[in-house]
Length: 346
Image 1 (cartoon, rainbow, N blue to C red):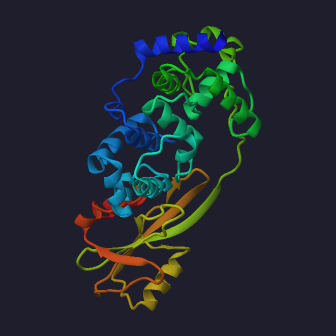
Image 2: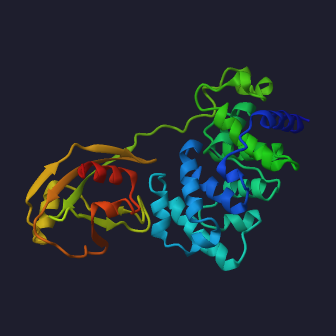
Image 3: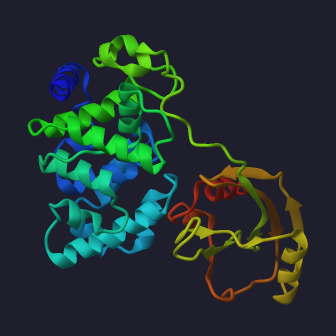
């Protein structure tokens, strides 16, 4: 009876207060749900909506995504972060087109790059009406508080208990509404801080609320000091106001995006210029900035150098191209690099 009561309370709340006008809900297709679920990983709905709309306008179906060059995909993704998501979308789209149909089983979806159990469950429950549990960040928070489960959800023991709870509560009927309701509840009421317990349909049975543990659950990830990486970006411009950009490797941080050449020191930049016979007309060292990734902080210092001599060369082991200011807006650039280029252009 507990599962049935849980479902009834949640669905009754969803009927009155659930979100039903998100762009990926109208219309609902496996492709659109897949794109939205990947974008929503580590990213708020309000941030995702404009990216999703632009993405779907450019790639309305899996075939158009598969046929596009990866640089076009990354360009539309620029600013969302976690760029491996975009590269995996592109790889998966090509695999889906090759096999001739969109997968409709948990195993087939999880075999695609970038699709885990929770994402596969969301696609199948929302778009295919299959009774599949999910366990994204919102659902983990709701269930950890409701069940009073202590321990960091990343631990195997806790994850196993949360998956068991999610499976027990997921209904056979109205599974699409239920799945959306769980995500909505975590996003709008059962928030990380200052949860709105008086408005929650599950409050009367929530262990965390009853035991006044909402601030303690779910248990935070054990803290550790994040590493700090320091480097210099070279912003090299010529007399035509072109800027030298290089294409980063396909994998790793900002994989597949265009960026500025990076160095360990100003001396290394000067040596690099000297070895390529680049005459330094003027240079300006801008204040250092910090960009935080999930596992480390990047402290970078931009060094802007102007040169008069025309230069045409390819950097060793990478692609390097001179771009005019108006061309830069069309490139796939990481957000910090784009802001820096906009700043240096005045």
